Length: 79
Image (tube, rainbow, N blue to C red; front, side, top):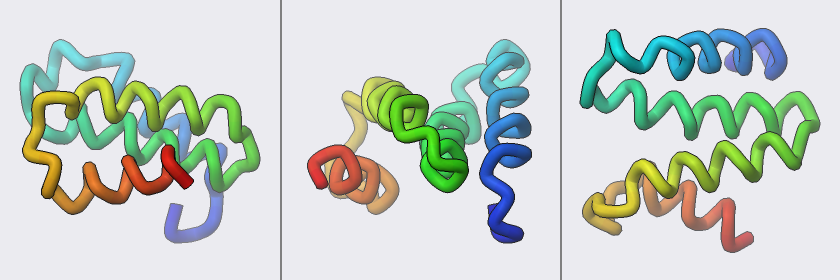
């Protein structure tokens, strides 16, 4: 994503999500949805980005609302 290549980045984050069993409850799995949403948005796929932001917020639904990454994701969905 730092190189501005949203589509290849999206593929890498999708690989993480496709192998959730390896991650268990590790936070990387939850953050993969958020990063996939960002990569999809970067590549111009707003529909896919919105779905991933919603999935991200669903995973974090019981989290402390003051967690910075959660606040950011909420801001994107509201904005």
